[in-house]
Amino acid sequence: MSKEIEEKIVNPTSIGQPTRIVILGSGFAAIEVLKKLQNEFDTNNNIEITLVSRDNFILFTPMLPEVASGMIETRNIVTPVRAFCKKAKFYQAKVKSIDLNSMSLTLTHAIGRQSQPNGWYERILRYDYLIIALGSENNFFKMYDVQKYSFTMKSIDDAIILRNHIINVLEQASLEEDNVELRKSLLTFVVAGGGFNGVETVGAINDFIRDSIKDYYKNIQSEVRVMLIDTNEKLLAEVDEELGDFALEKLKAKGVEFMMKCPVTGATTNSVKLYDGTIIPCYTLIWSAGVTPSELVAELACEHDRGHRIVVNNYLEVAGYSGVYALGDCASITDPHTGKPYPPTAQHAIREGKVAAENIILAVKRKNGEKNKVKFDYKTKGMMAEIGTRTGVAIIFNKFKLHGFVAWWLWRMYYLANLPTTKKKLKVLGDWISDLIFKPDVSMITRQERESGEEEV
Ligand SMILES: Cc1cc2nc3c(=O)[nH]c(=O)nc-3n(C[C@H](O)[C@H](O)[C@H](O)COP(=O)(O)OP(=O)(O)OC[C@H]3O[C@@H](n4cnc5c(N)ncnc54)[C@H](O)[C@@H]3O)c2cc1C
Image (cartoon, rainbow, N blue to C red):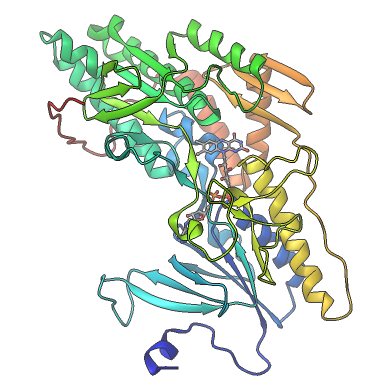
């Protein structure tokens, strides 16, 4: 091994070293694994746990649309990873590559000793057990113009950027007293995707836009259009048609327009193009129409499903690589009850985290004669979505369907209880109370100077 490579290895192999468990990601799945492993191996010096993520926080995604609408303050839905690292080491770095054969991975980080030609710094990490929980990215289905010109709702940056953009276009529209066409396109907001993400996003921004206009932008009252466009015939098609129908009726009553069975095929700064050739002049397209694993995951030398997710068995192990587990949004796990893959939700990621951790604990003990393994066999408890202020939809235990205020209340109580720390629970509760009392806050926290070109699709 060259001296250069040797110097890059963070945890080199040596006789009598601890067993190295490396967890990739700091999302729902990864943090659950971390918590369980730390509980078990708290005082065990023969076990070394390392967590690597490009983010040094865990993001509570179900409340992301409420950050975009300004109802919840940005930092209240993120919690530092280090708050969970009681025994584990944490490296904030990007995983560049994983070599399943040599049981090592390459990390890149911003400041270090030996710069690479791309300006980044690299370190190598070896593992005995590996958990891949790297989540997913937006899927633009190779529509590069849509990727370039749309806003997304996946990260905390997305929510901040979108909120600033919405306020910016309201300000610009308020200025355009004589150019009616431009004002109309500034005030048209299109959300693509009628799944959970799209429905919750459209509900949150619709209320925010209309409340803000009512309170602060009185000269642009009647020209707002908030639209949801989807390729499916029904909203929430992956959950329940009846709930989807209810969500549609409620959102319609709040002024949202729908175009169903209507794929988006292109975009520019100031327009959205549909499959049938329709062009919608608008400055805001929010893309919520699908997710896919990152290139790193898709190109890993192991079995993938058609959606490029890593195929694992019911013990969450990657076939052919002992000690390697994949879970959460980047894994394809077959539900033994339906024969279909489990959906990519936080609810499942957390349960998968528990099972993967349990299997690693058993595998470590197996060296001492323990033979058991735990299967991932989980029945979805239910699904809930908030579709704007005081309205929600829910299906509980695949049986009880709720909508309206009760579903909204349940949504709030459930997710409040699931926020990771008491501090964040209190802060979010405070934000909700403040929202009941005060008008929306329309201050932009970054100056947005997005160019308003005159391009057409
Ligand atoms: C707006 C929105 C609302 C949602 N609402 C709900 C809901 O109400 N209920 C529900 O159950 N689910 C919901 N989901 C889905 C849920 O968030 C995901 O299913 C869940 O986050 C998946 O968990 P995960 O651990 O697999 O991945 P993630 O939580 O996405 O975590 C992946 C982690 O990997 C890190 N990472 C990725 N690539 C690299 C790399 N190369 N190097 C280093 N680190 C990397 C990321 O920074 C991140 O920390 C929602 C999602 C969104 C976007």
